[in-house]
Image (cartoon, rainbow, N blue to C red):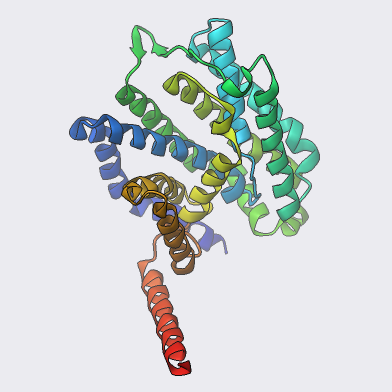
Length: 341
């Protein structure tokens, strides 16, 4: 059992050369392409990657279904935006306050509710996300439905970042940082406790793991990553509004994690890339692209129910077996339909 749990680490080491190539490619991507539009899409991919890595602590590591993760994204964005616009704080100076606010929100909602499981917890987190969106949508202090405008650009020493390419690299650094944190957390004692809770909560409790406390730690860790992403998000887009932090955004993050592979760092990255890039590639089909995306999502769930890149690695042999099995089933169904006619 313990030997099996070490397999994701071996998978990570085996993927290290490919990761280095991907890292180098992503570093030169905007410079080599020279397209502002493509760079902006890539930046959106990075933003979703950051959020997916944050949710992966909650869903992938600790096994808790969270349908309101965009709430922490909103807390980070609005806390930073209000301080930067109203109090004229530098964006970097607002970061600790945004993180503290998200931690407070995580403790406030997590302490009384994380004793719940499965669908009950999902409903509560969904409600929390809707509450946060309604609060920022109805308060005059947060700008109401119009949101906050005129958020100043990010300044790092003498450097002020105003271009899309500049923010691409900001979120690129965040993705690398979040990947490193996720990797270290998974290999730590805390990460092993999360995995034990995910596999069997009752057994973990019987072994002496303080289940509620560790679940709260996972919730808090995810909230920090969401708040940090939200802080730089507001600065990158100059303005923020409530629709950017609704249920649809939470659903996209959940979709990225589930498509990529719950608990898998590489899976979260690939899932986020697929969720953002796929509709953009098929944009020429207008509204039909959503249908195409839905069909592709169903195929991924059928062929790779464990995700594109699960914790134990790619295991392409299983993918071939799943494809052959799906082909046989489709052929059998078609033959039965033709025979019925």
